[in-house]
Image (tube, rainbow, N blue to C red; front, side):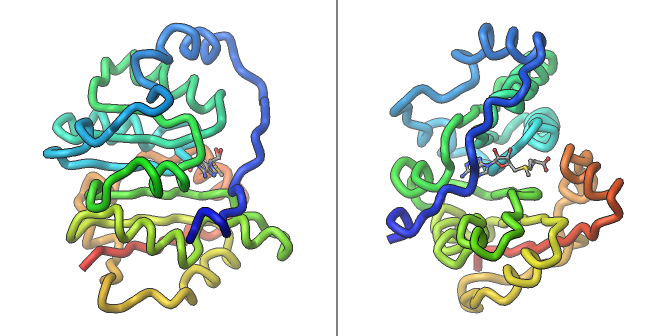
Length: 220
Ligand SMILES: C[S@@+](CC[C@H](N)C(=O)[O-])C[C@H]1O[C@@H](n2cnc3c(N)ncnc32)[C@H](O)[C@@H]1O
């Protein structure tokens, strides 16, 4: 079972929260953030559904919610300041098709999400855990990819980006079950996904002149 092996992929940091983020957390939490035990099946079923894992400041999550008004967008993040920014932008844009999970995505997917729930799962610039002794904390592992595969609908897409070359090389070596996945190029994606706004971590990577690596898998 994945849960037994699952090492937390994050360290909870308090971090600095701006007054705008605090105000958003205080006033918009109940509108957008999932309550303990809340069932999201009805939010996801019958609709094109997207999951954004570790959305950071939520640039991609809110962009997709705005530009795909008929889709349901679920974002997962444990970092409160990022949730504050995302709540604030969701309110400014009057988004009604977005929900936020403020907890670890792995047990949530395992226990609370039905199989075949998503058409698209994004995981952009997850924490790279560069030290060898921490590699097992990386999200992109065989068990995790199998979990994502189960939660995707047929033809659904898993889109991973990393600016950490070692993470990318290790991820590519994972024994993807060829019968279950097809590898895609970015050019095969919907144009909206080819023109996503840069995320905060993408900007940092570009500034530091690091490579922007992508793995795109489609469930067969
Ligand atoms: C390096 S940041 C990237 C943020 C954003 N995707 C971007 O491109 O700017 C990775 C984020 O993933 C979140 N994260 C890590 N593990 C997570 C998990 N198991 N469940 C939910 N969020 C997680 C962290 O809190 C962090 O904000």
